[in-house]
Image (tube, rainbow over the protein chains, first blue to last red):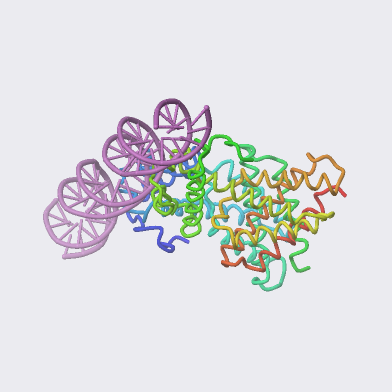
Length: 192
Length: 192
DNA sequence: GGCAAAACATGAACATTGTTCTAATCTCCC
DNA sequence: GGGAGATTAGAACAATGTTCATGTTTTGCC
């Protein structure tokens, strides 16, 4: 999950100092996104905040979108790692629902720029969860689980974004309803 | 639903010719959005496509966002009108689910730029559906229906966007699952 | 240590886009 | 037909995305 995926990255940093500077750029982008949304994400603002010249951004990232994609990927990896950690010992899916939603809420509260988890990333989450489900819970083939999981993840992402639009800490009602909706749907959609 | 809402519109057209030109601008914006997403929506491109000078856009709209908002509102009104038409005689909510999803799919296929129905618009849809439900189906107070409806609309919007990312005509599996998910959730969330 | 090659830093310069402004033209109504 | 308000028109300014040539630092190697 480290190699240059697709084409959002132009060069990967190889020296120590540049690894740090790339992280500074991602941190700066995350902070700007939290403050003013995607519209506030200007390349010059990122450069100023990270204390690097504009050229450095384009040295490592294809363009502004590539920078945002890289940030999304970094957040995705943190999210998956957090889920993997929490999933220890979980053997039935209703517990999984609580788990994943709670981790999402926690990330939204603590990880800057977590809003940038696009549809491309959602698919990865769905596949990861389907794999876990197939491995430890249901012996069914993973393919049959992936599509319902994709539906669940997409819906959950939208509802939790709604929860955080309503309240900075995540409106408790919408968080609770997200879990309720996921349980109601998966109870019908997953093979028994 | 016509007066200048909030502040996305700078002046409303009063002469006949300018009403037509404003519609040309919205049509051009819709076409560009369908072709290349929000990134392809440049004010100059809209002006060229609508065969008006840039100044005219800023004469009627506050800024580029105001133009997109106005398009979203126009699409929302068509959507609500379509729903209202189909809702004649419907007296229980499962039929409503099919109806609203089908109308959404139809609009996505035929109305240019329908992708631009933001969260602000979703709330209006939810309130409209809650009102209908309160009026003709359940005697319960509308307030108790609005929040579950908001959840349902937000989830449906996300899932149908997924369906249309997968296939230009809307992936049938995801469309069917959207209905399934809505039924499963509303069956639990609505008062019986 | 010293040296060549690769990686990196830097910011001026260019292209595109968002937005404003002032002057000229057109519509509508008395 | 005349005048006030509505509208057209596009040049001009500002901000942003992006590239590029040049200079500096790090790395691997003798």
